[in-house]
Amino acid sequence: MLPSAMDSQTQEAVNFSRSMQGHHMAAGGPDGPLDIILVALSAIIVLLVCVYTVKFLIRPRENDPNHIKRQILRDDF
Image 1 (cartoon, rainbow, N blue to C red):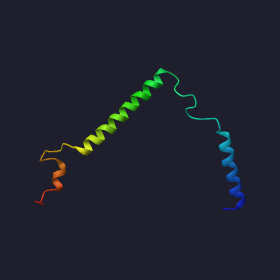
Image 2: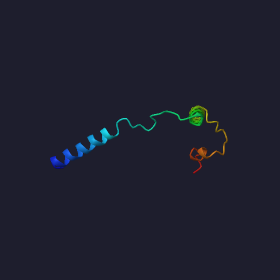
Image 3: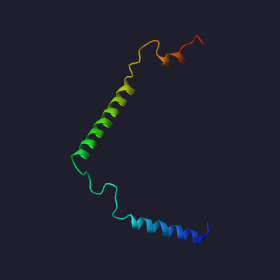
């Protein structure tokens, strides 16, 4: 790249950075009770997914002899 092109891109990046100062996506925080309810519900769902992921990773409870994972363990092929 030419030095003048890099200087131009650098200046554009600096200008963009300055234009975005003070502008945040969630600058004001939750706007009302509905936002708080949605965030709390989302947090509960994420927590439940994490708990069940660890639970089934530790104890998968796949004891059925016809379970699909057993097909690769059979020696009769």
